[in-house]
Length: 492
Image (tube, rainbow, N blue to C red; front, top):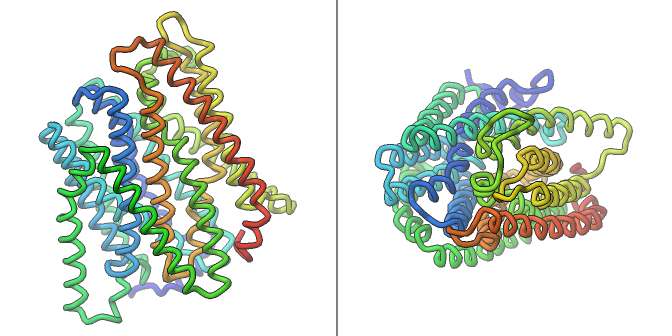
C-alpha cells in the first residue's frame, strides 16, 4: 500500500528514510557529473588540441547549458512529467551521452555526447532536489539538516568522480573514464527505480488526476521528442561560442519575465518571499562565476603551474583540484551545521542574507590566497600545491555558508505550484555563473605556447581581481540582509 504524504512527512527522528534513497541516487549521479566536469578542459586541451582560451570558453558554454536546462527540466516537471519521470528521463540521457563519448572519442562524438548530458542533467538535477524538499512539512526545522545531509551525498559523489575519472582519463584512457561515468549513472537510476515506491505521491505527474490518460501520455511523449529534437540546435550553439552568447542574452531575460509574471499573480505574502528568492538567485550568479573557476582556469592552472607535492606526499595536482573541495565539504559540512544549531539555541544565528554575505567574504579570501601562490613560485613557473589547497579549504567554508542553504531556501520561499520553477531558476543562476566563469577564465588565459611563468602571472592577477569583486559583493549582501529578513517573513 502506497504511503500518503502525511505519513512520509510525519517521520520520527532526524531524517526520513526516503532521504537516504535520494541521497544515494544523487551521490552516483554527481559522481558522473563532477567526474565529467573535472575532465572537460583537460580532455579538450589534451585530446581535442584546443588552446587554453578556447577550452575555457567551451567549458563555460557547456556548463552554462547544463544548468540552463535545469530550468527547462524543472518547468516540464512542474507542468507535465512530474519529478520522477523527469529524473528517469534525465538519467537515461546522461547514460547515453557518456557512452557516446566513450565509444567514439572523436570531436563530433564529444559534442553529441555532451548534448545528451546537458539535457539529462537538466531533467535530473533540479527535480531530485525538489523531492527532498517535499519530504518535509512547511516549517519543519529538520529541513536544513536534511539538505545538509543531501549536500554531503552530492560531495561524496563529486569526490569519487573527481579523483577516479580524471586519473583514469589522464593516465589510462579517456574512453574508459567516460564509460565509468555512464556505468555509475546506471547505478544511480537503478537505486531510484527500486526505491521510488516509498515516495508515495511525491514526484508524480501533476496531470495525473486532471488530464485523461491518453492526452497526458501524448504530452509526455511530445516532451521526450522535443528534447531529442533540440540536440542539433544545442550542438550548433556549443560549437560556436558566439551563438552561446546570443542564447545566454535571450534566455535570462525571457525567464525573468516569466518569473515576474508568476510573482505578480501571487498573493502579497508569496510575492515578498519570491522577491527575496530572486535577490538570492541574482547574487548566486556572481558566487558561481568565481567559484566555478575550479573546472576551468584552476584546472589548467593545476595542469601547468603546480608542483605535485602535498604535505610531502606525491599527488597529481588535477586530482587535488577536482577532489579537495569535496573532501573539505564532507569534513566541515557537519561542523558548520552544528555551529548554526549552537548559534540558533543562543539566538545569535545569522539570517540567510548574512550567511550568503559571509560566503562571499570567504570566497574573496580564497581567491586572494590563490593570488598569493605567485609568491611561492620557482623559476620554472610552478608553485606550491599546499597553498593552492589551503585556498580550497577557505573557498569550501564560503560554499557551505551559501549553497546548501540556497537549495533549502528555494523550497521554502516558493509556493507549491512553483517549486520546480524556483529550483530551476536557482540552477539557471548557476548557468549564468558558469557562463561568466568561462569568460573570466578566457580573459586570464594567454597563448598556448606561452611559458609557465607567464601563465602563472596571468592567472594569479586574474584571481586577485576576482577576490576584490567577491569582497564587494559580500559587503553589499550583508548590508541588504535586514531587507531580506523582512521579505522572507516566517522563513529563516
